[in-house]
Amino acid sequence: MSTLADEPIRHSPQSHDPALPDPEELATREEIETLQLTRLQHTVRHAYDNVPAYRALYDTHGVGPDDLRSLEDLAKFPFTDKEFLRAAYPFKAFAVPMEQVRRIHASSGTTGRPTVVGYTQDDIDVWASLLARCLRFSGVRPGDLVHNAYGYGLFTGGLGAHYGVERLGGTVIPMSGGQSEKQVQLIQDFRPRVILCTPTYLLTLADTFREAGIDPRSTSLEIAVLGAEPWTEQMRHEIEETFAIRACDIYGLSEIMGPGVAGESWELQDGSTIWEDHFRPEIIDPITEEPLPTGEDGELVFTTLTKQALPIIRYRTHDLTRLMPGTDRPGHRRMARITGRSDDMIILRGVNLFPSQIEEIALEIEELSPHFQLRLSRPGTMDEMTVHIERRPECDGAAAESAGAELARRIKVRIGTSCRVSVEEPGSLARSSGKLRRIYDERPRQAG
Ligand code: DLL
Image 1 (tube, helix red, strand yellow):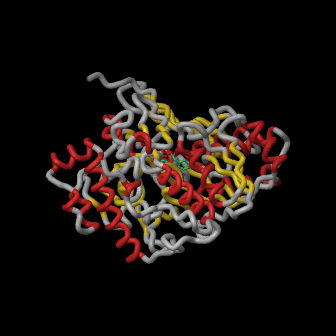
Image 2 (cartoon, helix red, strand yellow):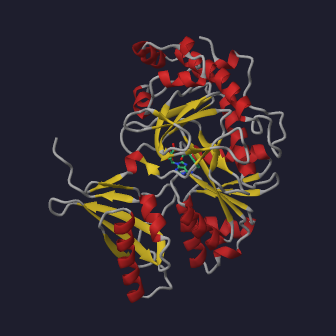
């Protein structure tokens, strides 16, 4: 079995000073595309030679590594998805012998088997250097104290971010998620400059600070690097105001690596830059599966360019967004905020909607808080949606009721569907300790 580890290219620039941008980060678009083609050819060959499932898939489609002569040729290759990885459970998608696999993570998968991902030492090094790149890009500096409240364990968030902080030369506090009172105490005592967690968990912490009689704006925190779930510009504003901090996005998914596939500039805050020296993104029409040009909305598809243990080719993420040209790092394109996942799309009496649209509208209304849930039911023959949303503590009963009516009105006008809005008491809805569940589908299952 040949492995990428035998190849002369080592992908992780370990000798590089992590406080400064590395040469690939600063590469031009042309240089990136040249690099992408070489790495892509290498990856497809590696997958074909070492993973029987890829070989079978490509043989069935009549394509092979020799068909990849330009980046456009990638479109000839079939997509992969979660099912492809599940069928390979647990380790059959690995392209290196088990002795070379240093670490395993797995997706939280709510149903069925988890999706298992593996890393060689080189994969872990690349991951750490990309995380360090993201953190630096988002304003974190060597020497910073970083409170890491992403979950540790099989989830990639905690350990992924942890190694990135260390690589950058920061000091990591490996707090993990949950135990909010303890988090608040440690933030007060250790005085970190940076916090890493999901956006909704940071809101949970804001409540815990207030319960402890501490103004969240008075903490030592200056920067939050937030991701692992969809969040809107309105939510960014809410978080920045609540804590008097700067909040940047970080994106990733376990199958492709974990956090750090894309990260956001602290100065520009203009969407996450995808690190295209390691990942080739595409946007496709989720129905026709045709690739769409940069700028059009569709489903994000990724191909890994340097992964050794688990090369992933044309993976359908189900994340809906669009690509935008690079700004601060012109060689690398950016992604717009994720509107949602196609599997989180609610179809309500023929209208498609995402929780992020409700978040955006709700946060425009002063009396309403960012704490909401969507409950779907079918009392008769028609589907109904109720938005349960907490009022702000400072807003009284009558004002809260009319704010609820205003939310229903704006949803009708902007999204085109009627729904009920139930304004709830502050603190009454479930809080996040990581990825927050927004949708509760209580409709009876269709027979057959
Ligand atoms: O959530 C990796 C991660 C950890 C990213 C920490 C950022 C920070 P998974 O559990 O495999 O991995 O979930 C991946 O989460 O396909 C998106 O739907 C969603 N997601 C991740 N980051 C963002 C983000 C991690 N910044 C899935 N914005 C992805 C919106 C995000 N959605």
